[in-house]
Image (cartoon, rainbow, N blue to C red):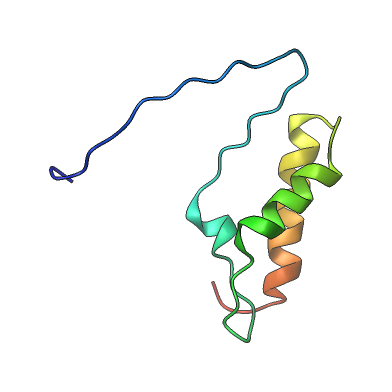
Length: 74
């Protein structure tokens, strides 16, 4: 993508802070009514898993996306 311009930013992290990176497949998971899970759904899951290990956070994010999709084709 030669025409894309990228910025640079920084952030200070404190001990026990969590950084979550994800692909569009998570926030754009759709249910049978073609509604997207969205970033709001993802943020709720991240908040509810506060203090959990990375493995538990990942598992819960995947579970939430699958529950939202409720069997809709991916």
